[in-house]
Image (cartoon, rainbow, N blue to C red; front, top):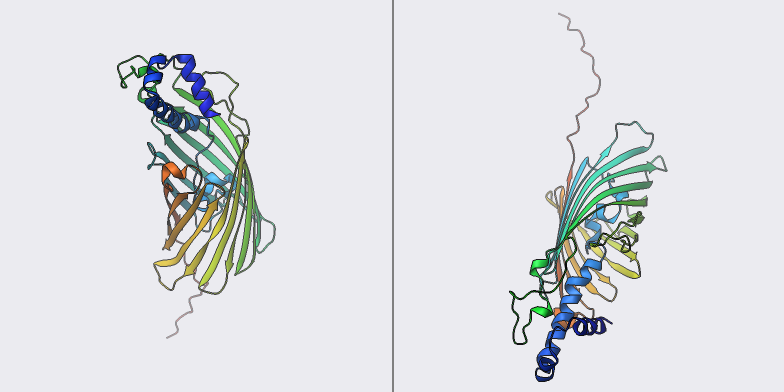
Length: 366
């Protein structure tokens, strides 16, 4: 379908003369292939919907707003960085940073409030299609059982987005003079605005059950783009951002005091697109004071990529690294090389005052 569309565009705009096509059919075929690649990697991303991380378990506020404040310490700082498709074209770069905390000042019985901030930035392709998101997140966590073994959470994310595109770096067929590309030739295009802003509302809920010290299961449901904001640079209301539905289940299973497994399933749907991820990690608990745990394992994104991950806990910091190996039909061009992703989670616990038992000073008798 894309090739048919390109052919129609080529014919409509008369990008190359018929003489050129007859005498240089080989080069015209290559030109169509290059145009196809430009269309696939530079135009289609503008229709793609959301930023994407392979380490769902390390991008918690992107995964579900109900995760804000669901921490054992007082504060949490998360950073994520992803570099994708460098082997094919200008790499797609995605950066995320979040901060969240739990608030216990409202004296709720068996409940607390979580609050968070989220910043995402994504830049894709030659056009430098840039998306920046800033979000305020609030969550409410309620312990259904008094021993906190069953906790239900709900969250809301209010976001502001700013998008921009750089038309100057794009090449067009009308700039090929029949022999070579001429950057000084007019492209014959009339561009729309290169900036776009919109607001967004996202909701989420989760449930976490701790059966014992060796088994914990949690699941969540998140619904993004509740208001379906406009996504057109032409300032019309015909192109809107499809709602995104995320459902996931994960578990932590202790096999003994040293080894545990962390299986998980993540499913996502947006418009007509679906994504299915499943896999898990093996956790080794060490006796070291500094490096407390080591994780390694992998996931498979159905019909797209295999993902290998390694992580470790150093004091209150968890560092993770993963790599996507492309398994889709794009592997012919990518050579199987997908994306490198780094994550960092820092948990900060405020010092707790030491409480001494009440004591009385006994009188001294002489």
